[in-house]
Length: 97
Image (cartoon, rainbow, N blue to C red; front, side, top):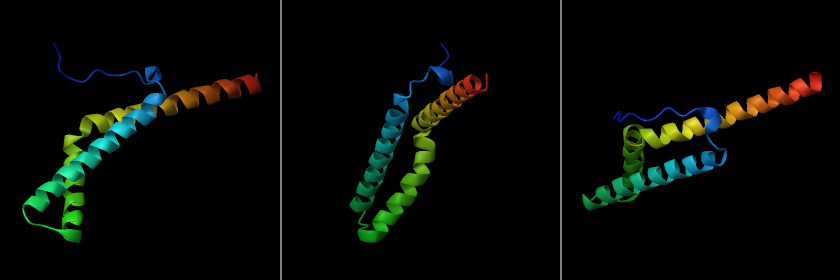
């Protein structure tokens, strides 16, 4: 079987999945930040420098580690935008027609 992620048709993604996808991504970002901060505390880095380093390291790591959830959130947002544009065009057509 092909292990690549299935391509999702944006028109089939429910609108409530936008909030869920962003909540999952944000939660995972927070967990990654907390994990990096904990590691920095274990090696002896404390205070503002630890927070700054954890923010920097977790931000860079999330680009690679959280690619899937970020792509899911982006796809859900694009699907919602496509649905809104289609509805706008439909309503505009009804007004013009």
